Length: 92
Ligand SMILES: [Zn+2]
Image 1 (cartoon, rainbow, N blue to C red):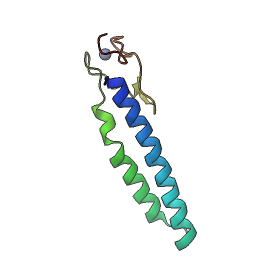
Image 2 (image 1 turned 180 degrees about the vertical axis):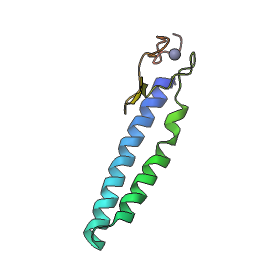
Image 3 (image 1 turned 90 degrees about the vertical axis):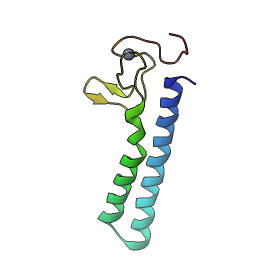
Image 4 (image 1 turned 120 degrees about the vertical axis):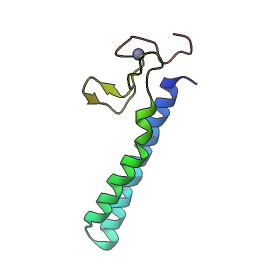
């Protein structure tokens, strides 16, 4: 499995985590009224779920697959933005 495959899997996992967080806040809102605490818990949960993002780096130059310059995007790069390595192939 390539680094791109693993990073894509992480992107899907984050989409799931986001859906669960939104549902969690919606359910708490429905049954207990508006709660800033539930919202805070959802944010903390998302940050914890996303901590693995920082480990998806280009094996050649170490650039993170989710960073585009100063910006962070929810989908990984297929080609390294710094050294141009093909990250979706086992042998670049
Ligand atoms: Zn690179």
